[in-house]
Image (cartoon, rainbow, N blue to C red; front, side):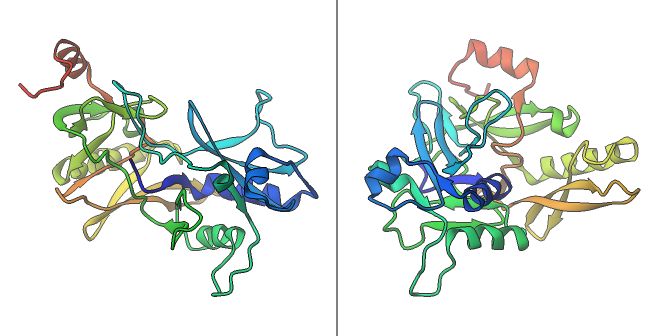
Length: 279
């Protein structure tokens, strides 16, 4: 299990801005359990589909299908047991996250922290489940708690549309998938990342802005960048994520964001060998 829940700042900040801008706030189970007065807050809820953040602002924010707008903490799931990497709340009151809190030690409140993250291009927001934690909120350029601690890794070839359908050698977590079940969880050796970067560079002459990302090595780290078109005939490359190598010098490129899948031959092989043993 992970130490924190991880969300994209670009997903969470709009929720916080919504809650801060509304004049009324919906009472939630989490607020009652926390014994907190009415105020702008994010609500962390846990259900069978995962862990979510939402705004308590009224008027409510609805998606096009009529459901409350909320964002999920993406993590791994173990397909055999249904276990996931997200920590489970020990008390519903821990899910009430006030946006304005006066800290005597000078720390930023939650809304200011998220705004600061956006200004300084810190892409990830980490939430510790325990309010008594020394560092409950964390903003970073590269997310933590990516890989299942007990996973067995097997070599495989994977692909996804984000990289233009290129196929790359990776180490895949046997018996695990992403929580959204959009793909497998994989790590890539440096040579595979270099091949991926070269392939993506070759796509750009014919790409529309934002059609595919590009990868750049910054020392040992890899930056994931997307082209942002200003609509006036010019564009710039914006860092969207930063991936640091793990202890085995592998990179979890696109983890929980890109739908990596096994190539056809690998999928067929694993269907006949469910343990995913290398042959």
